Length: 438
Ligand code: ATP
Ligand code: MG
Image 1 (cartoon, rainbow, N blue to C red):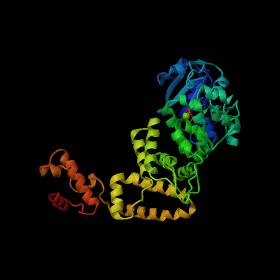
Image 2: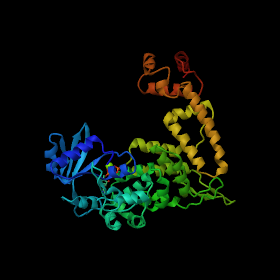
Image 3: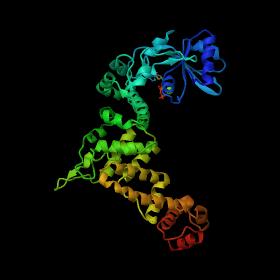
Image 4: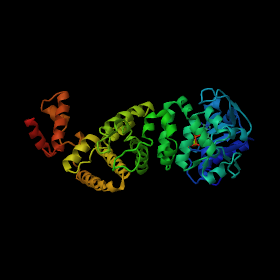
């Protein structure tokens, strides 16, 4: 392989010099064939774990001996070196009961999930690819190693890994594998919420996330049944040219690189089917959908055990997505006070995406957003005050004036409100003067 880094090549040659076979394997081989920078370099070897330990002592740590994994320190970086192994019987659709070491690289490659992940390459550029992974990569195909139904039954997480690789690498899922994913989707119920969360996070970042969501709503529906009513739900409203699911996917495709934005774009209208009404003229309405969407999103992110910070950010964006961005200094200062700069910026991006995913006649709403955003930039440039830490008086000033305890917080909040509302300039003397009127 042309681009094996030196610190990995050293590990391969040390193992070979000791009489063992050693190969780069899995994701790093796949990524270098694609011209992508691998996240990490994994090594697989015919050496048993204790043999690997002996070759690299004292620079080896027995991280997962029962699975055959030794972490080798090379040039200040860690490389996982794992003994060729075959997985024992699977009991819980997730982990093998036992692993058995083998001296055959081909047997090790056969336990791996997809053909593109089942290739090995050494420092001399020899490629071992018994399942045609390189050809699948060339053709843009994701395919199971072996019989898909069996492989997904062994470990149901592979279902989501498959969707994730397809979304991130822009691969089409081969027919048999695709049919098996649909057929076996219920097995995902055996998978821990945290694992689902990690895979979904990566999937939604993928350049082809939209395509995969369009093709596999049934799979997402196993852990998030709330999405299913969106699929094909006609909005009967001139603002919309797509059903709710397609609209949400369009919105997702228009925000990039920010997990909170991606998740809130996908979920911003999740409550629509629940509050749908049709008026006398046959026009559809969704009164109160932002609140219902907020509550559903909260439940859905809790179910996947998302961090509190991430959940609260997504939920707040969903809750706010249908409010106008203010177009006055005072309005924008208030929004800044409530959301902070980062989330107000996110909200503007979300609202742009939401609008661009609606019927083209309404895309001129972007101009209103431009206006609000210009005010935001102006206020930030002039260092406008919208948070307690920017306020020209602080808790110590109030203590000195004889205020105590919770009162201090309340008074600071009231002073900040007065500044944000334009009643008092953010200047010490003016604020202390205003205090006497409170
Ligand atoms: P990335 O690191 O970009 O997520 P990767 O392919 O390196 O992708 P890892 O989870 O790091 O994925 O796993 C390394 C390799 O181990 C994979 O390429 C694959 O060969 C194998 N592998 C990982 N998870 C599974 C699994 N659930 N079933 C079968 N093989 C797996
Ligand atoms: Mg990896």
